[in-house]
Image (cartoon, rainbow, N blue to C red; front, side, top):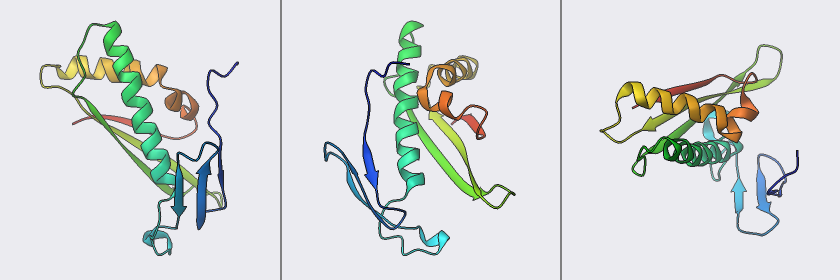
Length: 137
């Protein structure tokens, strides 16, 4: 695959700092209180959730435009869970919650989400690796 764009970021660990090569993102990282940290910074799961939500929303707009459906008022919320994988390590799970315009029927909404899930780069990267649930709010 020939990349159309490459993002570059460097991190010093869960308790440290993450910075992109262009310096547009520079965040303090800290373990959440639920994992024994002080919660004084963001964490990889929050960053993944933000990226997945933004990417899925963008992919939804593209899918909907091809079907002449207006989703300008739609929003996607990503919930990223972290838990033990039963093998001594950890695993992620994702729930994507879509708020769609009222004029979109539940059936059409489900069709749009399923089609989006096939084209979104984050969905393609995670497919078969972690559970991803699609929910219409």
